[in-house]
Length: 288
Ligand SMILES: NC(=O)c1ccc[n+]([C@@H]2O[C@H](COP(=O)([O-])OP(=O)(O)OC[C@H]3O[C@@H](n4cnc5c(N)ncnc54)[C@H](OP(=O)(O)O)[C@@H]3O)[C@@H](O)[C@H]2O)c1
Image (tube, rainbow, N blue to C red; front, side, top):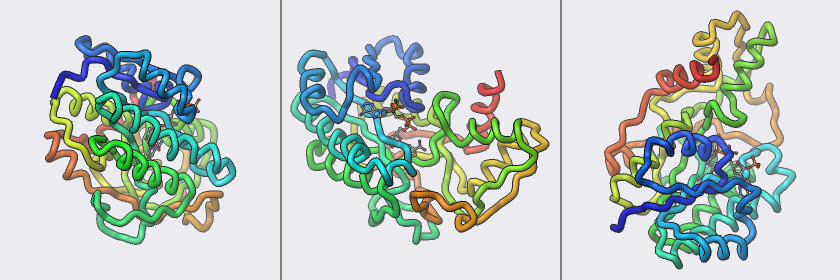
């Protein structure tokens, strides 16, 4: 496989895109093209085609997505345009121009009826509209580009952007107690770890297409996650476990969405950090 020198990163101001930007200085042999939503709206097919025609690209990492899970129940058309249609436009542009394509999906493609970690080829059956658009996005990517790598991830957080860790740190500093659901089981993903894994895949030049699962090691609930944030920050705020039924949201959440990560670890010889180790790093960064 030829070297993937020129790397396009779409949605570069999001959590994962920002982590790739932060990492890029450690990879001087690559030339990165970081595009924000303002610079390249991926749901505009003609813009995508024009961008790919005008730029020399060897690899595209699609970090752009509509990720507002609850708002997606209202903004269906736009969510579909970004997560489903646009994923297909990028996959096709990469296919037509012989460009390696890496795309991201979610644990929310699963319905949560299992009680052991989901495997890549387990049946998908999303319980909310965001999950449905991501599942259809996966299909669209595979139909348009048989060589794409799709990485499903879950509960993403970072020192960049909006996420559970930052929200909890703020609430725990402001309030005497917080309620957190204790009956949704899954695994968090530090976007910095995922960004490093993606660069590891690109560096290896072993671009094996397919769907992969990536999240930090460990299976927890959001409540466990919050309790560890409290411990790391030394907050005196009480963390109370509540049920999903006590915390209704516009979009349904699945009860169980832990994913098995053996395939990505074995295929690309990747080591994934334990969730507590990565969370400690992120909290430290956020406290600076
Ligand atoms: N966040 C999670 O918990 C989570 C969980 C599972 C899977 N994932 C998946 O992981 C990937 C990375 O997620 P993330 O957490 O980095 O997401 P994020 O922080 O929401 O970043 C997404 C980026 O895409 C941009 N964007 C939105 N619509 C766009 C468009 N039409 N054209 C170009 N850019 C657009 C956003 O810009 P604006 O912010 O200006 O809209 C944002 O900068 C996504 O595929 C996501 O579905 C995320």
